[in-house]
Image (tube, rainbow, N blue to C red; front, side, top):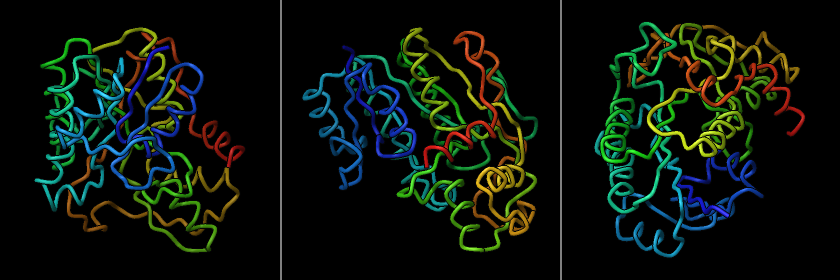
Length: 287
């Protein structure tokens, strides 16, 4: 049985991967958190000595790197921290592990002028987060021919322990009767973590390398996404108020027409991206 080490395994995607891989692979899930309830081993990927020890102890056939600093405004406030995690982590992996690496990246490597973007489109990140992820992509692909970068966007699932989830925020705010402001000028194709986990699984089966995009089936604004959540979870849509990105006064610039064109991955992996409504219904039934 193939052994897979997952870095950053305590997040939503890591949990989805463990669920999908459960009987297929031997999974070692690691986390930077001291709380090991949802992961097996403590690992800070920016610590090369600790990383070397963990790799020697576990001897994986493949590493899936989910470890990242994804708080866009925090990255903008602290570029050194962003680069130490988002670039330093993959640098440590490339220089310590000889096998294939699957690395998750983002549509924020683009400027959001003409999304959804294809793999060959010109990158032009608007913020530190996007820049750090682009550097990490290039570092991996320049040094490892058998590795894979998968760009994804607006990952979501429902997990009570995860405060970073847009889905959690919408559901919990509306359940409390709280009015929320949601931008109607940022466009993406929100992607269920279980959908991306299937893509990763199929990529391993096919020995895929290089660069691919994945986004689920609906290219919608964040405001439309919030309304779909309210519809499926039977919550009060009138509490959702549309605003413009410029009104948020955020530290980091956001791409507006984001999202990813995943036709290439759909073809080579023989997968059809699910609709947002279908994914939300599945989440509701599992909640």
